[in-house]
Length: 134
Image 1 (tube, rainbow, N blue to C red):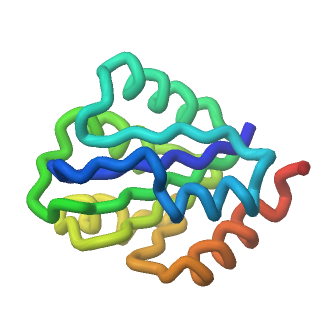
Image 2: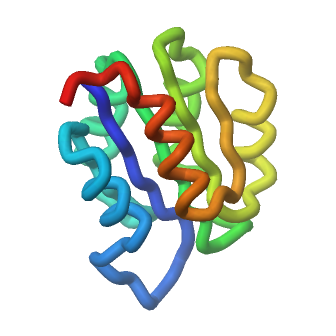
């Protein structure tokens, strides 16, 4: 199984269901399993995300940081799973978040990408998911 997880961190009152980056990734990689959550997601959804990430052969997790000071809260257990994973893992951090950057930037078991533009993101994901059957 290959998965792409989109996480939005921030207390934005302008919440929108349409996420342009997620739409582009879904269009380019229709064969992946997708989960989309935010700072207000229910606990059972976070538990499901943790299970998917733990079970996936390849997993990319995209953190869209809306609020740089947002506490990790329910995302912290996911971060712990990611830093312990031995399977292929891509972590993308879009926006500044000092704690997440410290957690992910120096891990040899993670492919870490910070603040890519859309074309760079797609290129990295193409390389990362190149061995996943379509």
